[in-house]
Amino acid sequence: MRIHGGPVTHMDTPAHFFWEGKMYNGRPAHLISTNLGATAESIELAKDGIVTKAVLVDAPMIRGMDWLERGEGVMPDDILAAEEQCGFRVDEGDVLLVRTGQLPRRNVEGPVNFQQVGGTACQAACLPLFYERGIAMKRTDTSNDVIPSGYPSLTNPIHQVGLVAMGLWILDRANLEDPSQKCSELNR
Image (cartoon, rainbow, N blue to C red; front, side, top):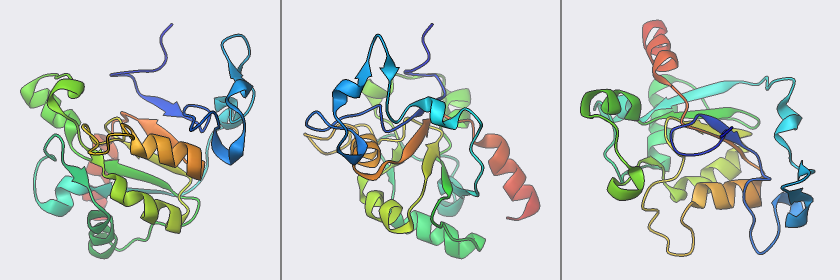
């Protein structure tokens, strides 16, 4: 059974990426194996669910468009503008949901290979804001990394820095259309 990859909605824990043989909190990579799975930072930590405040940043709505262009990233200014315009604040322990509008785009234009044509998500420039605010989880309707990243040694900076250096949990390819619609209906 394939539970991770391309078009699949899935959650990444800090056990998903390593830097110089280490995962979050300096734990050695050998704590993850094919035989035993993740013996540290396992997805099983969330087996009883995750209960916290979720905040939705609808980047296309903030920018007045239907969807973001491939290769274009959500910037810290987009998040700050959403806070100001929508009357919320991203705080410590929150789940930050970021909608880029890629699902409706797919429905209009058809599926594409993001590795070939590029993809959108939060730009790596958002990482300091994520750190300062102490978010617990990042969730978007894409892979969470702009493709191409623009960083030769960091092909997935949100994953590589977020998971390894910050202990951020990441949920890739979530359907954020219904929450976006509900927020619009409630003017929230």
